[in-house]
Length: 331
Image 1 (cartoon, helix red, strand yellow):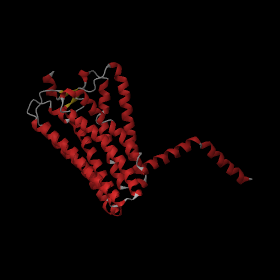
Image 2 (cartoon, helix red, strand yellow):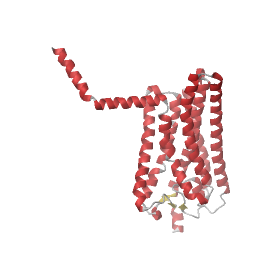
Image 3 (cartoon, helix red, strand yellow):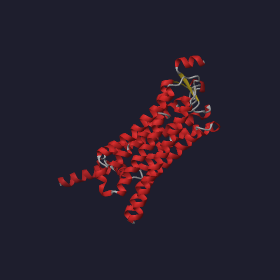
Image 4 (cartoon, one colour):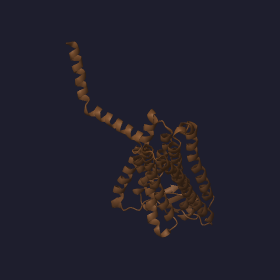
């Protein structure tokens, strides 16, 4: 089995460890999470795209987040749900598929940081330099920030996985619910200290740089609010920044737990659960926390909901009114 697997580049993925009795409830739960996350994120992107009143730099930069959340949930959950009903010994995946999945898994993790950092920069400019906001946050600047937010993960993750792909393999089992860089280089019997070191440096830099930039942005915002002593400005800063900070904390804590537990084999089961939650919790909570907390988006959602509800509840009354108008006209 070992030789055949290595020759054909077929890997055995551990997937979720579930009993036959719990397979259906877990599948339904994951399916509902997936539908909810996809529906909310796609809905927000469509709403921002069709509503001209939402065509602002803040909302365009925010679109990077739901796009990334769609990638993060799609690259993990459909495969997990598919493997739930398979025996543990039948959960096969080709090596190429595993590398592709690992690539987008790390793209999702890194782009979560870069997208939120660009949003923090936008809020800093809006609150600290409101008169120069339109001059600074031009369409060109928004495109540049979005390009940087995606280019950095694409390049860095490609280098990281390039170091892993060069290794020969003496094992075929991915001891993780899905493929990632650490699981891939653990398939090799060669010296993987370079891969392990690069992974640690990459993780530490991604976390530390994003935290540093976020702190700088919000220290400046707080300083402006304290100096100005403007209640209206302070209220605006709290409303626009609280949701952003909440989204960042959800993502940061989920990601930090997953990375930390990866270095301790004795907590492997906790790490696997944390890695799955990282791809479920932030994509599901981000649209609620950030989308509904943003005044313009919330008002548009409420307006569309009430309009639809009125059209469904009182179509008969509208027809009656039209008939009455016609009758009074004839008499």
